[in-house]
Length: 604
Image (tube, rainbow, N blue to C red; front, side):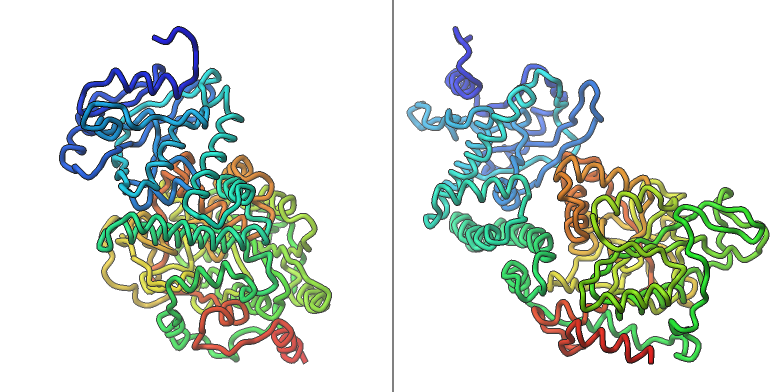
C-alpha cells in the first residue's frame, strides 16, 4: 500500500503497475460484485476483440436512498457523444484490456490523469475518446453486474464540489482539443452549460451548437466510413441537439429566428404530413351539429378537484385537463370547442371506479374539469377576455409565475391529468374514461397518449420517420387491425424502447394522460436535477420531464410501458409555428395577427 494518501489517481496508477493479467477490472472496496460479472465481461471481450473498455449497469443502494438500477448507452458511438454531457461509464464496473495501458515492452504508457481529482476516470475516458487510434467503448446490457453502495463517506459524496469542478475542467480540456477555434474561457462556459443542461443564455447557446458540430466532425474522423458507430454518433448528436433546440425555442418570438432549431431540422429534412391529415377527410359530424362558442352551455366555473352532482353533493374529479396557451386565442377556442364536443362521447359502457361512479345515471358521464394557464401579450388580451366569456366552465389562470401556478394546478387536480396545448384539434370521440380505467388496471403503464396510434409514422418536429414499436391489445394479444367502428377504439400498449421519436417521448404535453401522483413526483425530480428553471416554461417542463425517462439514474428510466389508441382522434395544427422553418404543404404562412382577426370575424 502507499505510505501516504496521494489521491485516487495516484493509487490507481500504482495499482496498474502491479497488474499482470490480460484484463484489468475496477471495483471499490464497499461495492458488491455480482458472481457472474467477470465471466460475462471476459466472455464479451474475447468475443469482441475490437472492444477495449467494457462497463455495465449497476444497482445503487445505501441507507436513506431509494435503490435504483443505473444504465448507460451500450455502444461506442452513443457513448462518445454522451461523454460530452455526463460520465456514462460507471468506473467500478469497468474492465479493460491491459494492452491499452502497456506497450509491447511492458512499459506503462497510459495513466489516469492527475489534473482532475475525483474525476480522473472521466478525464481518462474523454482523452481516449478523442484518440486517433480510438479504443472502442461498450457497456454490457442488463442485468447489472455490480451493487454500488452510496453513503456519506463515499469519495463522490465528500468531494462532490471537487468532482463537479474537475468534471467541468476535464470536459473543457476535451472541447479545446477537439475544436481549435475555442478559447479556454469559452470552452469552460460550454462545459458548464452542457453538464448542467443550462441553455438559458441564447448568445452562449448559439455559439455552443456550431462548436459541437466541429466536435462531432472530429469524432467522426476517428471512425471508419462504413462503421455503424458513425450513424450512432450522428443520431446521438441529433437527439441532443433536439433537446437543446426545444428548450431554447421558447426564448424566440418565432422558430425561424432560432438557428439551433433550423440546424436541428436541417439534419434530416423531410416535410410532409400526408399520413396525419388524410384522416381529416374521414367522416365526422356535420358543421351544423357542432356547437359554436356562442351556443356552448354556460355553467358555473368549477373549483379544481371536485364537481357538483345532481344531488347537491360533490364527487372527486377523475381527470383535470391542463392546457397551456400563449397569444393564440383562435386555436385555443377550437381546442376547447372540440374537446367539449368529443370528450366522453363513446364511454357508454365504461365502469368508473367505485369512488367516482355516479350511480344515479346509467350513462356515466365523465367527471372532467378544464384549466387553461395562459399568457396574452397586449395585442391579444381582448381575445382572451372574450374566450373567458365564451367558456365560463373553464378555470382561467393568467400566467404570472408559471412554476408556482403549475404546482398549484397540479396539486389541486383530479386523480389524473390530461395535458393540453392550444394547437390541438379533436375530430373523433375521446375515450377518456376508458383510458383512465386502463391506467388504473395497468400500474406498469406510465402514460397514455391520445395523439399516438399505429397511423403515426412521421415525426414532424424532427422531420424524420419514426420506428414504431410492437403494439399489443390490453389482453396481451398482438395488435393486427384497427377497431371497427371508430367509436369502439381499442387501447394498445407498447415498449417505448422499441420505438423512436414520438414513441420514446413519454412526457409529452400535447394530449397525454398521466396519474396525478406521477406528475407530482416527476416535477419534484425535475427540480432536484434542473432546479426551478426546469418547470419555468412548458417547453422546458416537457423536455426536462422527458429527459428523466432517459436518465439512467432516475426511476423513470425503468418505466418502459406506454399506451395509445388504435385510431387517430386528434391532430396538431401548428399553422403558424413550423411552416416557416420546415416546408408545410398544407398551409401557407399565417401570422398571429391574422389568426386573431379570424377569431373576431367568426364571432360577428
